[in-house]
Figure 1 (cartoon, rainbow, N blue to C red):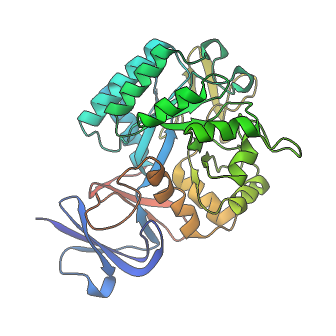
Figure 2: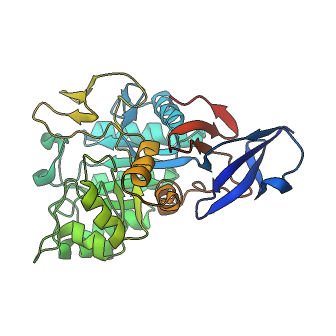
Figure 3: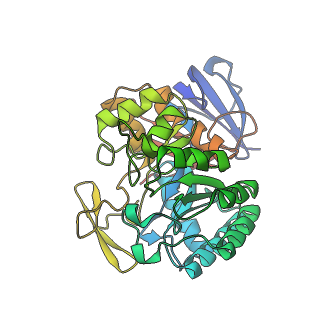
Length: 378
């Protein structure tokens, strides 16, 4: 059995930072985490910087030039997963943006195939729409946004039973509390987003089973003095929330406020699109062209359409630009999202798959290991 020992000045285990520790890997699994001077014999790599669990991204619309859409196949999902592994996210939820019923069916079929084949990096699916509020469409096609029917509900409940995780971004305007409850009971993780929901409506959805909010602050009702909106429900409650930390989708001062209000429960997402891991300067979202310019992805009218961001870049933004602790930033990209979707990932402990990332001392991604195998980052 091949043994590999990785040592680093700092090892983040998913909860705390351990100084001068070693991770022992055998047959693609972690077999020990212990002080470096107690490491067993075997091939040893002494790393600089910080060793952390492979990052977990719960909102990935595409990568490697591919969008997750109605053309989805097992192979295309595998390509997206591999692209994001090279970017540091060794576990992802490929995400379908609002599309036709046929596209939803195709993506679910491909996702179930990916789960059955144990596609590396595939943790399940995220369906962002089509059951949203057209008043908060964002970059979604308003012609495809629609209320949830009983046929939709049955398909989604069945999908939840056959996927390792399924996140659904929904708006209370397009679903009922009873539908949210049925989805939650079937195993789906209901996330509120693209919605004008009031504070009371958000709380009613939470009581029905909603557990999360999609890209906090973006495409949702904002915090007001007399109407707290969905943002207020997150900042004052127990909902988890993904957040895009690129300094563009959320102002740094606003992000600091959210982080102070919620010391746990917020997690980082990339909201990555087809251009992730490529040098492409444009791509198509349905029939619309998206331009990549100056770190932004934009529709022709200037609407932000996803993000040109990787999770390691988001981690670095929190640490180097906002002054947050590495422990906090890394937890938001590992343990917290993994816990939300109940995945066996996002931490370093014995028996866990050896999915790891190495950050340099200045918090750039250096090396990625997936199932104990070193893969070249982009």
